[in-house]
Image 1 (cartoon, helix red, strand yellow):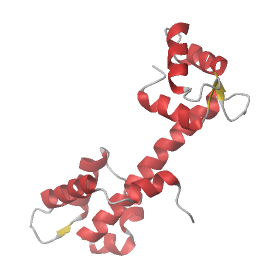
Image 2: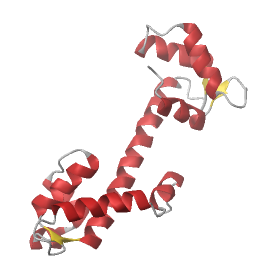
Image 3: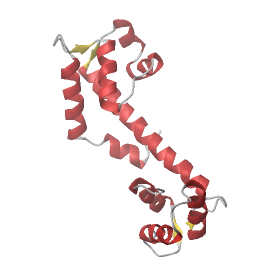
Image 4: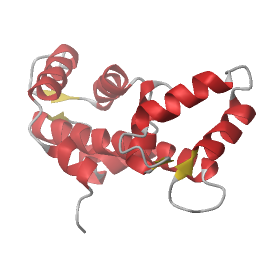
Length: 162
C-alpha cells in the first residue's frame, strides 16, 4: 500500500522526535536494562502523546509476543512510536477532511465564500462577515473565489473557524 504524502513526511528522519522518544525511553527505563515493562511503556506513550493507551492498543503497537514477554526494547518502542505518530497525523488530516466535507454541502470539491459564511453562521455565529471574508481571501491564494482542500487545511490549522 502506497504511503500518502503526509505519511511520507512523518516517516522522514525527525531528529527532534527521535530525541524526544529516546529521552522518554531512558526516563522510564528505571532499572536501566534497555527494556521497558508494559507499565513503563504506557507511561512513555502518555508522555509522548498525552493519553493512556488501552490493552488493545498496546497489542496493536507492540505485538502479542512483546506483550507476553512484558518487555519492550528500544527498537520496538521507537518503531511503535513512529507508527503512532503516523496514526495521529492521519487522524488529524481525517478531521480536517470531515470538516471540509461538512462545509462543502454541494460536494463540489471546493468551498465558495458563501459556503464558508454558512458554515461560520452555524459554528461561530459571533464572527462578523467582514472577518469571515478576510479569512477567506487570506487563504484563497490563487484568487479564484474558491478554497480547495489544501487551502482549507491551511485555514483550519491556523485556528479558523474561531
